[in-house]
Length: 316
Ligand code: ADP
Ligand code: MG
Ligand code: MG
Image (cartoon, rainbow, N blue to C red; front, top):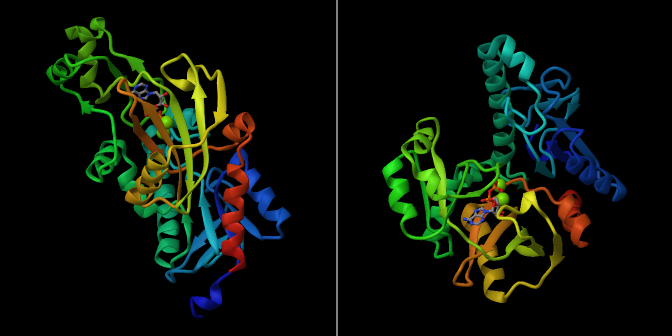
């Protein structure tokens, strides 16, 4: 069979059936008469059955030939005990080594599956080839190298380096990976005892940006939503007071689209924050941004834009 013959016209949704973003996109595709298949990566391998043969498009999910889909939404692989929605606490407590090994096996198969789609030229939201560039210590430096404004940042486990960095003004600190609160680095954090924690894991130290928070969505090279988060807290997730739509200055809009290109993303939710000098700086681009909360709060239509992009691929 040729690869052309195995085009299925279906849109693959990779993530959990229980994930509201997967559910929302599936519903919107259904309403447009577009066939979708959920590759349920949360219930794989205990429930979802998956078989891959040596052919690039030899892909069977729950008995259905998925082959070469028209496009794929990669929401999440759920392939780590710490991943979103995964509950592996009991299994890890019982036998962490076997559990971690099983997760690694699962993850390897799923990455292989997605790698096949990339090889076949399936439009992937987002392509796995961008993954390595998303790790923040390379992401921000890639943006900077492309001439985009990023905050002064230090990723380190070196206490002396932190003390030197802290001498130059207000500093925020946060995890290297993200996903936990950002705090201001205070003088009491610079003691030997406190900095000894760096022996357990490196941390991100960053010029503290006191100004407004923006969230911008870029899809296929276009801005589809720009929001301002009005809050008094340092980390907006702790204290969202109001989220409103805004119009980006042309220069910033161009920078957002460029940032997306630099990292090889088909779509993203960008976090920007304004510095003391008034300049907007890039905090990060997310490879699988949530959008339903922002749509609900601000009246944007990221969900609609995203689903329509998938529909267009399915009708091609
Ligand atoms: P995550 O991946 O956890 O979302 P971010 O870099 O986007 O990581 O940081 C989360 C939030 O914390 C930001 O949206 C912002 O509100 C706040 N924050 C992060 N870095 C800084 C900083 N350098 N100065 C001030 N606030 C920051
Ligand atoms: Mg963020
Ligand atoms: Mg993030």
